[in-house]
Length: 113
Image 1 (cartoon, helix red, strand yellow):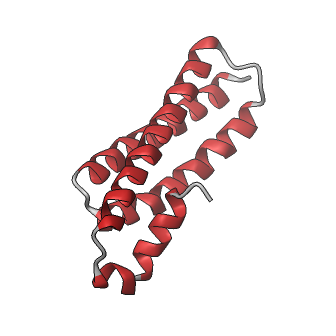
Image 2 (cartoon, helix red, strand yellow):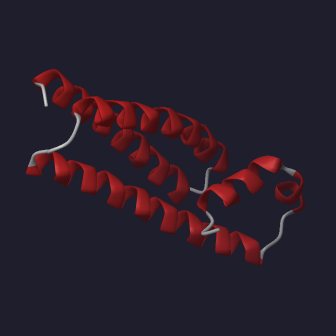
């Protein structure tokens, strides 16, 4: 792997990790509009990560594998937290949420199915 490809992958991972931190905060304060905005950003940053990963090839260093693992763990944590939020919100139905397709998309994005 070239130094440029390595640097590009690290930069993409850092961007994605920052977006995941923002998502974590938005979930914590239950700001679903912010979560929706972050989901769009996250999709774009994930595409950058995947592109950088494919350009970098394989045989990643231990440090790089550790960074990738941290990003994956943060994503899992966000998914679990959103599911908890989803379960809590399901217990108190809200007509506005039922009528808004955005909330349906969010639930689909974080549901196990």
